[in-house]
Image (tube, rainbow, N blue to C red; front, top):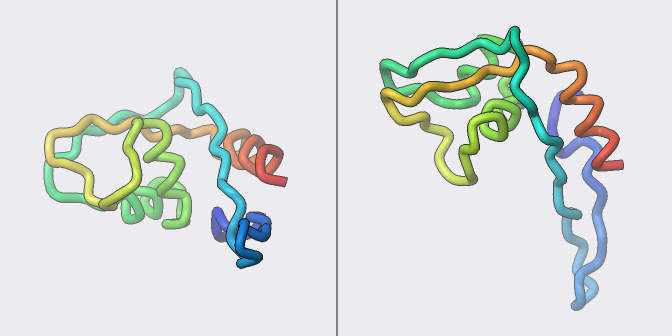
Amino acid sequence: MNSRYQNTQTKLDDRGKRVKAPVIYPPIPKQPDDIYLRVSTSERLDFIAYKYYGNSNYYWIIAEANGIGKGSMQVPVGMQLRIPTNITKIMSDYESLNK
């Protein structure tokens, strides 16, 4: 899956306008093989996702695992990030929730 919106369904709102259905994210529990890093320079979630997963579209996994809400892709300097490594399970759970 290249985009987290690939399987997102559309629906009609109250005015009959087509809108995307809400995206449901799976819980991402801590695992013993998760990677931890402290951000020492200004970094972006999508760049970090590309470095660890080979796909910048998986930035949302790192955001969810670290409780980073919507907004900027910038990660504050000094923040410790958890990089989940069980991406196959996470993507399977995501796809199941958003069918």
